[in-house]
Amino acid sequence: MRVVFVHGACVRDGSWWWHRMTGLLLAHGVSSATPALPSCGEAGVPGGATGPGLPEDVGAVREVLLEGDEPTVVVANSYGGIVAAEAAAGVASVRHLLLVSSYLPEVGQCLADFGDGTPAPFLDVDPDAGTFGVRPELLVDTFLHDCDADVRAQAPDHLARQSVRVTGQPVGAAAWHDIPSTYLVCTRDRGTPVAKQRELARAAGRVVEVDAGHHPFLSRPEVVRDLLLDL
Image 1 (cartoon, rainbow, N blue to C red):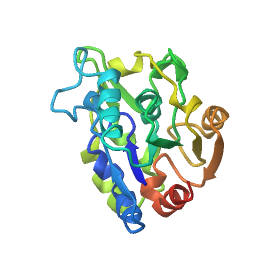
Image 2 (image 1 turned 180 degrees about the horizontal axis):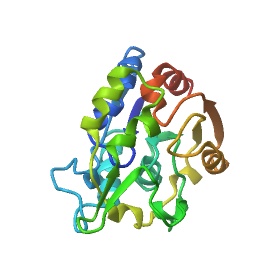
Image 3 (image 1 turned 45 degrees about the vertical axis):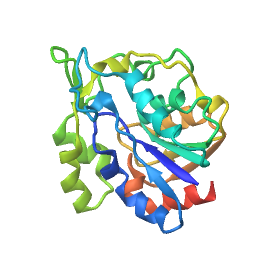
Image 4 (image 1 turned 90 degrees about the horizontal axis):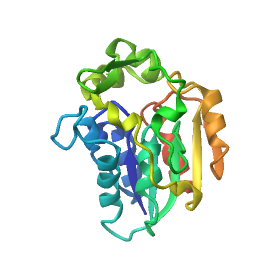
């Protein structure tokens, strides 16, 4: 089995965000990969009004998924669910989707469709540059309040300004209709309210709740590991 991790919006260095999972899985013989998302500047091209967007993110993840035929579980966090919905579609090796406080878009939906038309208070949008990002001063209290001191100290170095284009670009497929899925509701999440998660989770095949914030793979990695091994 292989696990492919897809990180959320406004961050970079996916291998860091998932680093507490990789060793735990490898101890059980499970390999993993963390595709770089171009819209977050991870492909060497700055994000912005004319920079890479959702199609490039989808292409980057899909390329990794098509690298082999080993049975694969895709783990997507937050915005990563938007990417995975299209990237995993029709890939025979993908056996399951694990959606962590994530989005399940229908064909034609975009990230903005899940909001109320205004930026979340923890986001900073620069319309001139065509980017958005997490306000550093709100990062810990919103997303990492249940993580240890090491994670809280290191996380700001792994934030990114992301192309705002991704918020309005619709997905061309909804893989979760055809691939078995599990939704992991994070009941202490301050970024995506638990009521919103439970509403989204109704579309998944299975729902599991965990007493954790937005990044349980950093705060409670053993729980996520056990869930993956069960899958």
